[in-house]
View 1 (cartoon, rainbow, N blue to C red):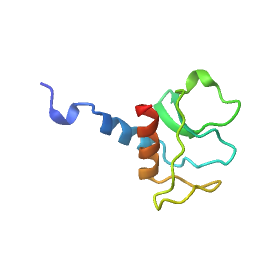
View 2: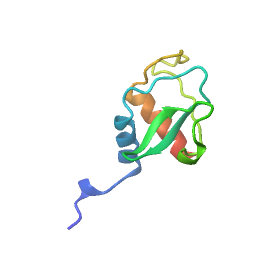
View 3: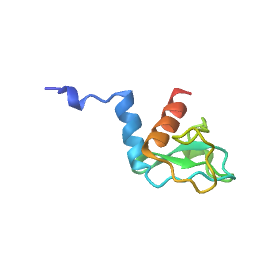
Length: 92
């Protein structure tokens, strides 16, 4: 029997990817935030020149900090910032 809590939804997928992506930092030289496929599933990362495009979704995201400010180099993304980035990438 399928239980409601077992149904995969868009919002649950976003939250799960964002949770798995703890520790992601914004990098000034990045091409934006991207999703990369790993053995653990999709993870959010700062896309850098030279990363293998075959493992990444083509969309990139540039998000502001939770307070609306611009991300500085090395800024560690919060859960909400990661969720916003994942949502933007998946929504294309």
